[in-house]
Image (tube, rainbow, N blue to C red; front, side):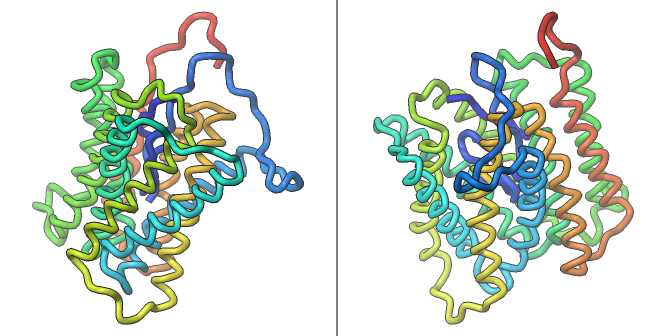
Length: 343
């Protein structure tokens, strides 16, 4: 099993092998071996989609995930939104596993590690984003999600001895967090900003790289397939929410159509299908290209929030977002390429 490093997800589902949009977050590095072959995705053996089409679809799906979370919380409690998201997402992966005749992972130790990964990469960040969007705009939540690569860079310098810092990456880290302060309006004393909701969104973004580092340390080299591990991880996250949700919520007395459809789409497309799309893109063109989806997610999330939900946008929000993305890009860059290696 290849390990995961941050791309976002947006609040992507952020499974053990693929990060999240709502991921969204970085695709896994390539496994040792020959370079990936660029192929096309076949649907039903008839319609064939180029990876660029799936890349664009992935960016749109994860970009709209924050809007879907916002609409979902208009009719359901945050934990219920997360439970529904995981339910429909797990259902999609269960169907994919059945079609491909994949088996669930074996070994109690693997399941224990997957349970921890499910909490850090799914149950916790999904719930935090849902609670955050009770008080902050979906546009701000999408921009906070873009800080995942920055958190990942900061944590990897401490937790991963093989990930050596460079001046470029450290500069990117500083620039990125300067962008965060710009988005939050630090020079105004954060006036008009809901600190609790914003802190939850940033904590959700921090949870992703913590989970990726844990997966990298515990599940690397697993003999199970990516799909099998991810399906099991989402199932465990669903069980976690099934235990927690009744403790903090009561059964809904109504099921409004808009929020219900939002949760269904958020789970089936924003979690289940997005995982399959991202895995296919990374397998064909590699993690470097796959990672670039991260830089489109906050743009789409902002456009969707402003145009569809009518959310207000001040100058510092888009400017700060651009600074964050520039810093995140630097943290993912390398000073040079090894000699003899093709781009």
